Length: 446
Image (cartoon, rainbow, N blue to C red; front, side, top):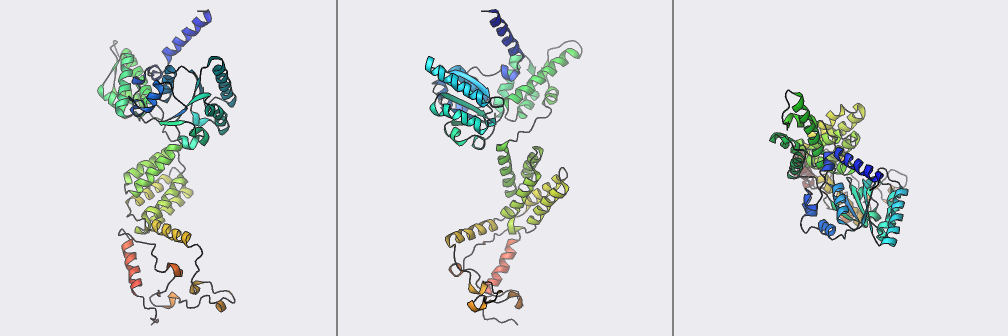
């Protein structure tokens, strides 16, 4: 071994010793992976492909700290192909083409395939993704793309269609506990059971975050054990974990934007003000556009509350105006006010179903004539062609209403609005029924 190799080996060992705990604990066998049994359990699809070294291009999609990079490195250790790695954050189109050139030469000279692991693949531009396509399409390279973002939003359709999508799930409490216990064993240190419980409960499905927090906790425990009097065996305490956890950046990418928004609206629709406030808080903490939140509230006021509480739209509209007039952070109060008001309001989707049914009829009968008595009669000559003939002005009747057919002839009798039994709607429905019961078209104003 040459001197350069010796120095390189020494540098690798030194760097390995300084690597974060999460990196030093990367699994060496498929059985060491925690939390992804639906993909890597015995007989599961991804495990079978890896063990048979028959993996085709794949996209590994999951939140941070769920093992995407670890899994890619395990694949590297199980394949006879050459494993190359790029980061979409720093790689260029030129880098991609260089990989493809090397893969072509390798296949021609050695009959050996190439796997390209591309981390953060969602960060690749359309041009960069297009540069990958020929190699993926021809099988020149096997692509393993890792992403935290929804690939249906971030990846080109041709690239995604040529890859198998495997979704990694957030790590559950038992998986996080396994990682924490491995970390403690690896570092040769003990921890209070409450400290372990706190790390597990605050893991948030992110194994790397849990191990990083554990590593800081261990450092704090060791420092305390040597600085507070005579040296003692360090033990990680709840206080160490609390100090280590500090604050964590809220994950809120494109996928979370849609999921949290959906949960927000569904919590309002489900009349759960606490859940609705939770998702509102998540959106605000993540920096979501307050005007977007206000628009969603205005929509929910008609879509889900509707005529059951006719003040709901006024409240939502007022909140939207307050966002423009006051701005954040104060406008969070107006958004919270509207969120709670809509969540606790009686619910009816009768307006939503009514307009949907009306539009369906319009599509089925797109050109039905407007009844003659309802046509515009204000221009010269309109009366000579029958426009307005027979129209009765409701305000001339002391009831403020006169019986008449307003729908086109083919749709007379059609009912689109079917009121619910909730909130204000029964009273409105009863009033309408009373009018419909008074159908004597010959009645004269008294």
